[in-house]
Amino acid sequence: MKKGFTLIELLAVIVILAIIALISVPIVLDLISDAKNETSKRSIELYEKAIELAIARKNLVSGFNPKTCTVKSNGNLNCYGEELKVEVEGSKPCGGSITLNNGIVKEETIKFTCEPIPEAKSLSEDSWATIIANVREGTTEKYNVGDEKEITLKGEEFEGKSYTVRIANKTDGKEGCERDDFSETACGFVVEFVDIITTYNMNSSDNNAGGWPKSELYSYLTNTIYNALPDELKNGIKDTKIISGHGQYDSNNLESTDKIYLLSPHEVWENGSSNQINYDTAWDNTRQLDYYKGQNVTTDSYGGAIKKNTSNSASPWWLRSAASDATSYFNIVNTTGSNYYTKSADNTCGVAPTFRIG
Image 1 (tube, rainbow, N blue to C red):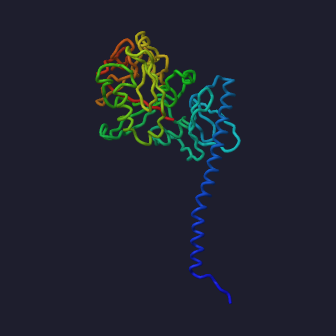
Image 2 (image 1 turned 135 degrees about the vertical axis):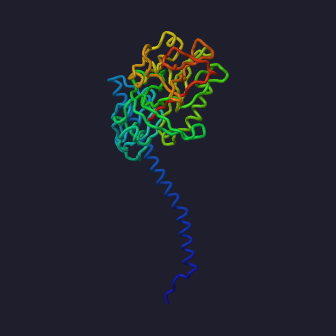
Image 3 (image 1 turned 120 degrees about the vertical axis):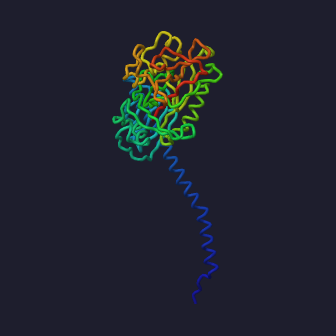
């Protein structure tokens, strides 16, 4: 007579199998995850070495020494608007960014899974996500210097009001942007507010000690105004190394890394008056933006630098450089667009922020 399993015995077997599964499945999953991570790590290492080799080869021919590059969807790099071919065995990434120092990769954010790059139409039509993706890809032919787009700011300060921004720069000017002492504020895809969006004092204490990075306006711009930007836009705003001229309290130019900033005199005017160059200690650490170059904003012709306030009247607006011959003054653009003027830090003046996308 054949004897089968009792119900209790079957339940015991099922419980044992369940316990084994509970123990073994996480182990197997961890092994798979570790294998994937190790493969990904190895792929990144191979890609970084290929980047360094590609830069070294190009550097021999043309003195190529980029500081930052973005990874294109085909795995090549977009460095200063120029595509650098990266030859590597195995899988290539399809997005991300690379920070370099003398041709050596220092930081990387690499993606191996990416959404398709949406086709660009125009700055005014496209979403910020589309604009950002195309800027990173280096496909910005549909976006031209001077093109404008409406933007709505959040928060109680701005009450959902709309303002206009424009493309102020597209080129990198490799001869400057590769320098360690060069401000990135005029490098790459730069967007600025067309007009003044609010007014503020630089410092209520009426001094320029510590320059732009230590000012009250700096804190207001970094927090209140930046946080008022649309989240979709903030996802694509790049960190920017900023060099600003110092006042009489300080002896060296001031450096900061920010997402939103004010322009400097040389980023507006092609040539400075003798006072402007003498008293802006960071004049040679940046260059004129494409937009103002196109507007022929020189020392003697400066109407293209005029910005209007919320009442649609020409109004002075702050620049970030302190005046090196004074303890309280910062540079401004006057109502006529002229570059001969400064204001005490405790004065209220127009604010027209700028940021980079990439």
